[in-house]
Image 1 (cartoon, rainbow, N blue to C red):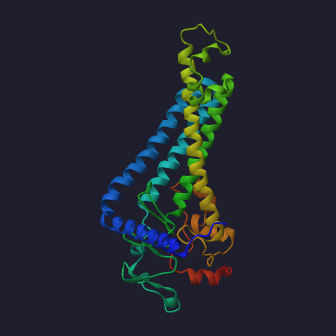
Image 2: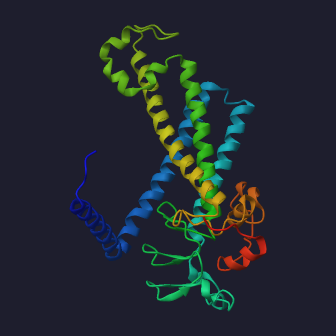
Length: 321
């Protein structure tokens, strides 16, 4: 085993601390500029990707694999309308729902006598904040049960809007998964899965024309366009897989945190693990899975995001681990 000198380890630690300090100093100095550039760019990329897959699937892929006047094609129009409504709606609701500490009524911005010892001082805001409320340097305020700052929704995800963020990830994952199934089926129906890899196709050079192409004459002048179309399909599938993994991995991570009663800001904290269904209700509200039908479904939360100790006494929280 190679032994690393203590001096080198100290220098590495100092470098990491210096880089982290410099990063936060940069964020503090250029916070407004970062928000003005990063947030619209992230939201635009998501909306462009959703719009691209909608047009690609409905106007190019589905007409190739089913009858456009049939029930299946009309059903997919309804499914797309449902997904677009929930993706755009949950994105807007997550953006418009303020989960900061200052959104509370004035009477709730001060601790109850029985909970005063649980509140802590935020050194940035210079005020007492409730349990699970942490400061966001981009939003420049404390968030109730802050999970993380989301660039796509242009604000922090926390106690009051985590429901919309989870629903957004769920419908993005559902849409990407549906598109993936249709894209793979389309390529499989062409019986040329080899052409689904653009890099592999380019590496085969002109010798590829000598391969058999089912149902077509290799001397057909339109063969190049047909092969190119399959290559485009393969490239879109790769983009589809990337989007599906990105959305579903974030959804799984959110579900893991919810099941543990934790959050991404403080992953190891299980002090507020009330059991799976109680944890889920604290995020989705009293109507639970009905919220997946539409962001317009009202679903009141059990409390306002400050009374964690009172809720723990009522429900019986598990001991921290």
